[in-house]
Length: 251
Image (tube, rainbow, N blue to C red; front, side):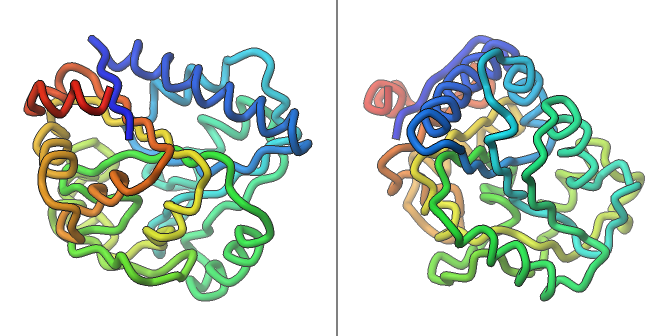
């Protein structure tokens, strides 16, 4: 695992987008198409803004999969991740081959359909973040490190739901759904490359726990340390609690 630290999240996002664009271009040149997993949330704003304006990406050759979505939430809701991806990725690039997780449909059927498409070929690169509670996708602690299910229905813990409230997606805590469809941990790790984007001081405790503590279901994103091709992008605020030894050994 490589950790890169930047002064601010705009510079962080631009650098992560540079790596992501290079990976997408390489996949399309080698195999004729690239398969990616896209994350959402406030942490991805600058990254997606930079990626969608990047030159030289043949977006019609990109197939995109959705990382997670709330169960029961309409796409018209401001917090819908389907809406987020349409506005911040799909409409900006003209990408036509994408698989969104419809929060209003039967979760089992949504999982069946998208899982079938996901399993058709390997994933080239996954874009992920880390939650304030250390979650990876919507796999809150204690995360299931064993299931091979590509997607699963999960129950969101209070810390996760409070993060969504704090980011301004919902008016009150009771408005935040209690369940979500999430890509499984082992499925995320199957990606050939993982680019993890984690800005902001509110993530500093989770970053320290996941990258300096034990690899444990109680710190779900700690599992990224077992992946052979993961790059973590931090800003000075999210990296503030990491030791010099950690930063030096992972650079």
